[in-house]
Amino acid sequence: MIQQIAVIGSGVMGRGIAYVSAVGGFDVYLADLKEEALVSAKAEIDLIFEKAAARNILSQEQINAANERLHYTDSIEGASQRADLIIEAVPENMSIKKEVFEMLDKYAKEDCIFASNTSTMSPTEIGSFTGRPEKVIAMHFFNPVHKMPLIEIVRGLETSDETAASIEMAAKQMRKETVTIKEFPGFVTSRISALVGNEAFYMLQEGVGTPEEIDKAIRLGLNYPMGPFELGDLVGLDTRLHNLNYLHKTLGEKYRPAPLLVQYVKAGRLGRKSGKGVYDYTNWEMVKR
Ligand SMILES: NC(=O)c1ccc[n+]([C@@H]2O[C@H](COP(=O)([O-])OP(=O)(O)OC[C@H]3O[C@@H](n4cnc5c(N)ncnc54)[C@H](O)[C@@H]3O)[C@@H](O)[C@H]2O)c1
Image 1 (cartoon, rainbow, N blue to C red):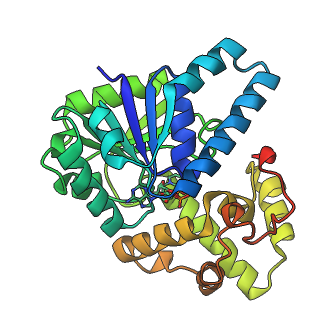
Image 2 (cartoon, protein in one colour):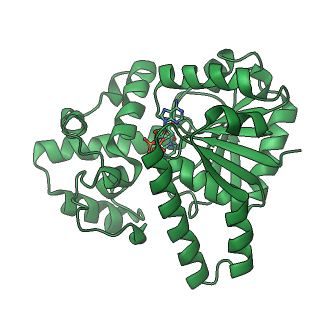
Image 3 (cartoon, rainbow, N blue to C red):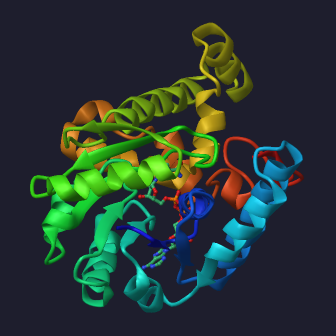
């Protein structure tokens, strides 16, 4: 039975996963190599709690209890030793994930389940970095995690029924809907989202419209809740580029990243998290998330 969850990586996604896990009643250890990432994760989680209180989504008692269950740590080893389930949310780069999973495999309890929040990559390959491929699965959350209702579950070749069932139960306890799909690069959601986001960058490069015009056309004309640039800035343009590079390698030419997107990432314009992406967030409060 899953009671303790370690979340590895406290960036855009890890902090949201830690929040929904704590609110769902799990003891949570949110771990990161970088102290500043943990500090900013705590600040953002506190804001989400504040908003949940203001909107009567959670009572003050529920918030206090969830806060008590949340622990922030720079010890990946300590966090993973305690966990029944480890959710990995480090950057979308297979060599980083390999290093992390090899390490987790050494520290974690024998029966601990490993879930990757990868947007595109193979849980089968990730499982092969460990001595427990039957306990490895992809658990793909969406951004912002506290608002988005879905978790896309992707089983690897060796993932056991027991592991998949435990993840379904954990997702339910986090009050999320699930869809379980067959492993293929980009799953369902990232494959579509990467194409739309990339096409928008090609349009910007071609001078078809300004970012505001393209976003407005997609929001109001196609009834998307956010325009592709608003979403790209929320996701992180570096993460979007990692996804596209992987999909380009695995699925071919139609996923070749737009040169303008590559240029933005080279310039350090990563979106909301760096203060500037397609749009400028310099004077923008985190509260708006
Ligand atoms: N950003 C999104 O909208 C989104 C949505 C769904 C899934 N994902 C996936 O979630 C994962 C994380 O993405 P993100 O956007 O949160 O990235 P991010 O860059 O915001 O955060 C990654 C965090 O991992 C930490 N980290 C790096 N190496 C580490 C290590 N060895 N041990 C512990 N921590 C380490 C970094 O310090 C950073 O805080 C990726 O696989 C991404 O594809 C992202």
